[in-house]
Structures are given as C-alpha cells and as structure tokens.
Length: 207
Ligand SMILES: O=C(O)/C=C/C(=O)CC(=O)C(=O)O
Ligand SMILES: [Mg+2]
Image 1 (spheres, rainbow, N blue to C red):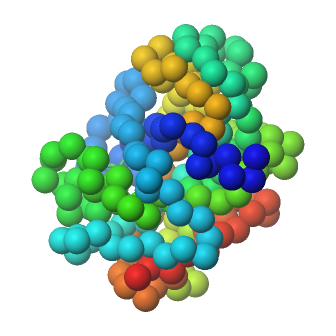
Image 2 (image 1 turned 90 degrees about the vertical axis):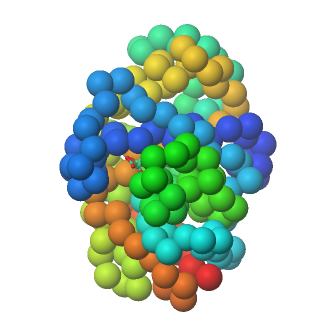
C-alpha cells in the first residue's frame, strides 16, 4: 500500500470548506460542497520539487487533509462513511492563483504537474479524530497557515456521502477536504514545510 497514491484514479478536491479561507478571498461559503478534480499526474512525493507552471506569477500554497478511499462505493450513507476510509494523507493543493482569478475552469491552475504534493499514508488510528486535527504550514520557516479540521464547513461524512451521489468512489481515490485560511504565495527557491498534529511533517522545495 506504500504506493497506493499511484493506483488512485482521481483526486476530488473541495473548495471553500473553511469560512475564514472563503472570507480571505471574498468568496461566499457554498451551501453544498463545491468540488473540482485534480489529475493524478499532479502527485509528487517528498524528494520531488514543486515546479511553477508556465505563465504563473502567483503560485499559492494550500495545506489540506486528504481522505484516502479504501472501498468502492456510490450513494454512501452518511453514517457508513468510515467503512470507506482507508486512511488519510497530508496534501498541498498548489494553486496558480493568477489563473483561478480570471474565472475560467481550474483544471490548469490546480492540475498542473506537481500541483499535488502528498505525504505517506496516515492510518486511521495514527490520526485519531480527523475532525480535530491541527494543520499547519511554514514557508522558509515562517508560519503561514495554522488551522484545525474542526473548522470544516462540510465534515468528512458529508463530503463522502455528497460526492458519492455523483461519482463512484474507488480504492486509492483521494478527497482533498479544503484549506484553512492563511494561503499565500511562494516563489522559486523557497521551502514549504507542513504538518498535521504531531503525526507527520513533510517538506518540498519550489523550483
Ligand atoms: O474561490 C477561489 O477562487 C479559489 C478557491 C480555492 O482555492 C478553493 C480551494 O481549493 C480550497 O478552498 O481549498
Ligand atoms: Mg484547496
């Protein structure tokens, strides 16, 4: 399962799932989860660098909790969600902010190669309560994001039951649950380090 990420067919990402993050971009909080897809070709793991995509002058970091799906399911009932969770990952939803702001589809701005740095698997028991996990991110050692999954607007059972009404979830799929506030730019030669509780940290250089 060490290479489970390579097996997943899709990354389903949630937007505006933290009120303070929606507010920092002057966006409304959606009543139902707002989702988009990132291609699995955007995955990288520690040791690989984040590459700024062509034409991007405002590459932003977003630290997020990722849910790794362990069992195929559609129309998953809210109360059965845990049967479908294999574990978790820490992830970055790297975003070419200057491309999202023109209002066009986000496929390139959030789906370019290296746009989804991820950690190794975090088991359910290692994480404990996924709705009470501290997510933090530093750029060159300076704290930029320091949030908690308790502030999600739509919690994990809601996300799994909602998404699976429309898209069958399959083993290895990942759901990125949205970012807390504090997003900001990174430039070449900077380093991003982020972590979740005291369970795991990961570090990526920007090229
Ligand atoms: O609303 C926008 O223009 C963009 C928001 C995001 O980047 C959405 C997310 O990816 C998120 O909230 O995590
Ligand atoms: Mg995001």
